[in-house]
Length: 185
Image 1 (tube, one colour):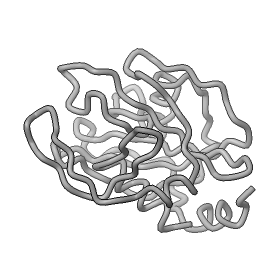
Image 2 (tube, rainbow, N blue to C red):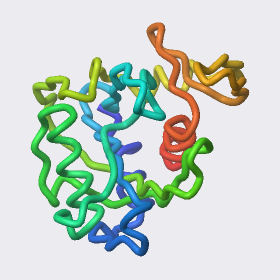
Image 3 (cartoon, helix red, strand yellow):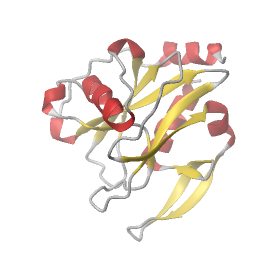
């Protein structure tokens, strides 16, 4: 197991997990769930195709929009993790966050990126908004980053750094979050 990398990550993330949204209608939370086995693994999802979803079909971290019943963005992250992949996390699994990110197609949304750790590989089931859930090792991410050009369904062309792993492309805001995590370890 890559224990020194995990210990470094734990030291470097913001320890403030109970974050209250400043603008509840424009905030969301995602979780980078890390499971240390022989290597560090991160859980990703691929969203189902839905014409009403601005991120339809994309690879992402489990997460979603804040709801008033959540009270905190941590509760949003916990709720979304369960809804999207069936994993029940608790506050004790969360080591902190690495800050806010905004998607380029809806920049007024602020997404708080949390880091959580589980010490075992959990059972994963795809929820109603998820086409598939899958694990990628930190090593695979590090060795599969490249400049890409994507032709988006909207007709736009996107250029930037992306992670290409097992036929999947991790790009956009999710790639920026992954890059931030990798820079810490």
